[in-house]
Image: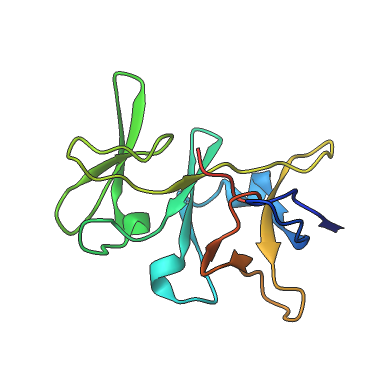
Length: 146
């Protein structure tokens, strides 16, 4: 399934999209690490909490701790992931922390099918699902910053 994601900052580059799996399968794990071809500092964590999906940079913006290994808690309607290294908290929806830190979050587009499936940009030259990159980061028009 290929489609152009739109424009990013005046460019009209198209990107290939690849289904990474049905929501019913992806929801079985609390967090999945989506690897970037740029290395571990560019990986994305795909979180599933109460049937809702969230995506944010997988490494804590404080010291690079693995957020997929962190605890997830809800307080006053706010879902937060806590870094397992130093207990920094990040709102799964906004990326904001109780500190001055900010974690990059991404919108997750859904396929227009009876059973929603999460989309993940891919490099069509390989068999693996990869994060599509543009200028060293994720294409903001594909995994939209929120």
